[in-house]
Each structure stands twice: as structure tokens, then as C-alpha cells.
Image (tube, rainbow over all chains, first blue to last red; front, top):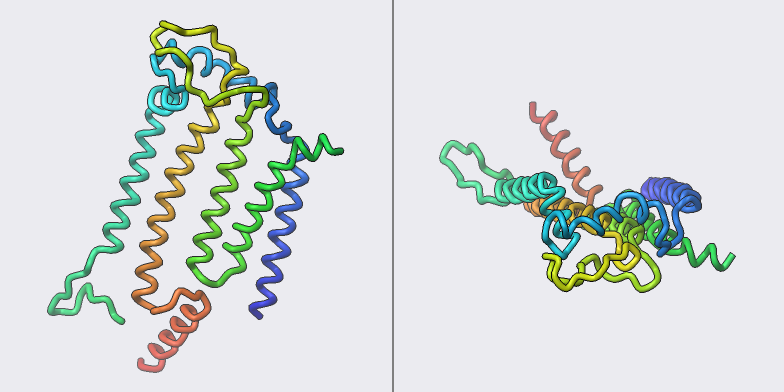
Length: 104
Length: 138
């Protein structure tokens, strides 16, 4: 039963991997300076980020200036995760009535 | 043929990493191993995106030379700096992966406190036994 399930998952994983390797045929060659990801949008950032934001580091210019709302949402994600960790791991105080007790 | 392999082998490495992660998430029964598989999967995606920003031929990290106020600044050549956008996007992905890993580990601690095991089939057996006991009691 368990080995059967493992076989099914192995076949599914291999099929997914074969499909993705077939898909890499259309990907740009590694390190190609003229590939689509390197030639459409990013030259504008490299050429103009310093003039517009006065930040030599383009990564932090994009992170904190162009996409600052995205970074704000990112900090909201961190906040939500930490709050949920806090609520999951806090020690539940045992009450007299038995409410909130962790039943072992 | 060799040129084709040299141009594409990095993607194949990431596909193999993704297969390892996906198999760990689907085939393993230990919940910690499933979580490690999810982390391997996320790492493969991050590597895929970062490798798309690589430029061969002497490109360096996307930090411009000069002080950023126009002094001591040479003419900026696009081919001299790596693509900064995949780096930024994967920074966001790393943050999300850290958050999900943290919450998942906290949940695993709670599961271990309650069932004293992290094996999925043992947890399901305990739950089935508890449900049968409950219907028997009423």
C-alpha cells in the first residue's frame, strides 16, 4: 500500500521533471547578455536607477524605491508569520473549568 | 550538441533539485522531511530565477561604481552589470520562504506535543483510533 503510493508519486515526479526539461528547450542560454530577461526591462533600471534614486546599489534602489509598497507587504508577511508563531507556541494557561487545556 | 548542453545544463540541475523536493513532499511520510523537501523546492526556484540574470563577459554585481551623485561616475554600460531584477524578486521569495518555514516548524512542534510522533501514518492511526473510541463511547 505504502510502496504503491511511493511508486505513484515517483512516476508523477519523473513526469513533471521530463515536462520541465522539455520546457528548458525554449529558455535562453546561460549567461547570454542579450537574452529576453536581460534586454527588455532591466537596462532601464541599470541606466536610470542611480539618477532617479541616488542609490548606487540597484538592488536596494528597486527594493526600497521602485517597489517600496511590495517591501511594505513583505514586512506585513513577516509580521503575520511572527504573530502566528507567537499564538501557536504560547503556553496555554490551565483554567479551572478545563477550557483551553491541551488534552494529551 | 556540447554547446547546447553547456547553454542549458544549469536549468537541468534546477529541474533535478525541484524533482528531489517534490518527491520529498509527496513520497515521504515524515513531516520534517516534507518541510525540508519544500525548502529544497523553493531553493531550486530561487536558483532558476537568479541564473536568468547572469551575463557572461565580465559583468559584475549591480552596484554602480562612483558615489551615486554623479561624481566620479563613468559611462554606465548595461553589459557591465548583472540583471538586478531577479535578485530583487528572489529577495521577496526568500522572505516568504522564511515565513512559511517558521510557521510550519511552529505547527510541527504543536503536532509533536499532541501526538508524540511526526510520522504521518502513525498520526492518522492515532486519529482513527480516537474517532472509533469516541463513537464507541457514545
